[in-house]
Image 1 (cartoon, rainbow, N blue to C red):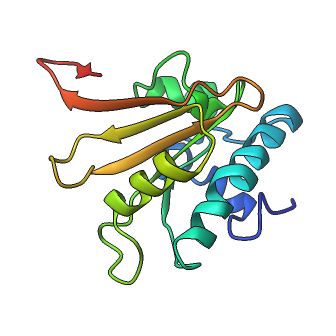
Image 2: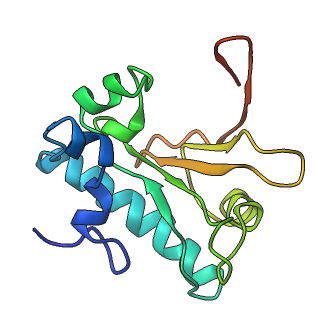
Length: 154
């Protein structure tokens, strides 16, 4: 397998403890892999470079449809990389990298994206950052996700 980009290996992009534990195949097909590469090349790599080439931790990237369903993901989730691709980044537990707030603001102010979501957290910083990229169809949609009664509210 080839790497997704300069700083994301194929193994990192497809890793899921849940998939391993439940013996779920989490392998992208060629089209999904291409969408993942477009996200990495157009968002992740410029983000890293723009924030001083510091480490950014990807907490979730590709999810097979089976895995996505099992964890309660949206049926239209771009983590499945069928229509664009999505990744979640969480750097707040990584002391030498940029904060989740830094990541969110840099993407919002400097990069093309389909969706950028401030996931939970508080008014100072998201708990993690979700970003998607859909070449030729980027909406530049900004969302904030909060807990509702038994469901997410955007």
